[in-house]
Length: 421
Image (tube, rainbow, N blue to C red):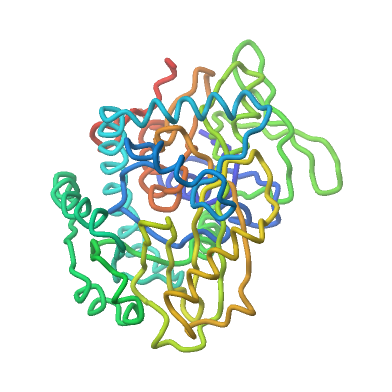
C-alpha cells in the first residue's frame, strides 16, 4: 500500500517514518527545498510532556482580557473580517469550560506520555543527534498565587503517569544556577525531570534523511495546488514543481500534515477542519557566557515564554497571536522576548546576533490534534497540534500508523477520528 504524506514538517516526517517502518510504501510532498523549514523551523525546542493543559482553560478568558491593548501581550487577538477566525474564537471560549478542559487535558496527557516513550525508543534505535538534553523542564512562577496552583498540578500530572515536583525558589536555582540573578523575583517552580529539549528542525531533517535512506521518496520544491476527487474518493494530489509545471501525484492513501494550511486544501471536499493559525515568535542567539545561560529548559508561566539550550545557542520562544496567515515579524513582540532574555540572563548571549523567526502553529480550539480517518475514503489526518507539535509528533505518527493498519492505538481517552465527524 502506497501512502502519500502531504507536508514535511515534524508531523509529516515522523508520519512517513513510522509508516515506512510498518512496511508501507511512502512518499512525502512539500513546497520547501527540504524538511522542517516552516512551523518546525525554530520552535521553543521543548518536549513538554508535563504541560498537557491547553491554552483553552477556565482562566484564559480573564487573562486574555487583561492583556488587551498591549502590543507585547503573550496572547494577542487581531480581529479580521474572517468568519473562520471568529468561529474558532467562539469555539475556543467553549473549550474553556471546566469539563471540557479536564477532558482535553486528559487526552493530551495520555498522547504526550505515549509520544515520549516513542521518541526515546526512536532515539535508541537510530542514534539521532539533535542537540538534545535530557535535563527536564523547569516551569517558573513569579507570584505566590501561580505557585500555589503549581503545587496542585503535581498530583494531577501524577494521575497521568507524569513525574513532577514543586520546588521552592532556592531549589529552582540549585537545579539551574543561571537563575541566580532572578532569585528574588521567583516564587517557585515545578520541575518535570522526564521532559527534554533539543532542536526540532535538526531532529526532523535528520529523521528525513534516515527515512530517505529507508526508501521514503521526498518530493521537495513541489507545491500542492489541490486534491482530485472522483466518485467520492481522492485519486490524486495536484501539484506544481519549482519550474511552474503542473502534475499529479497518486497513491492508495493520503495523509494531511500541512499544519495551518490543511484546512483550505480540504474545504472544497466539504471537510471543515477546526484549525486556525496561531503565530508564535522565537529568537536564537549565540551563547557568549555558558555559566550564565541555562541548560535546563525553562518555561516562564507568567509570560508564556520558553527557552532551551541548543549546544552553543539559546532558543527563546513564546507568545500567541491570532492574525490570520500573516508571517511578518512584529518588532515589538520580538523585542519583548529579547527583553526577557536580558532581564533573566544578563550577559549570557549575544543579542546583537539574535536570529528572529516567526511561525504559524496549527491550533484547534481545545488543542486536541486531529488524528485519524476523514469522511473521504483514503484521506487521513495528522494535524492541528498547536503548541505541542514536536512533543506529540512521535506518538501521533505511531498512532496514525496503527489506525491505517487497522489497529487501535494504545492511547486511552483520546478522540481519534473515525470518519464519522
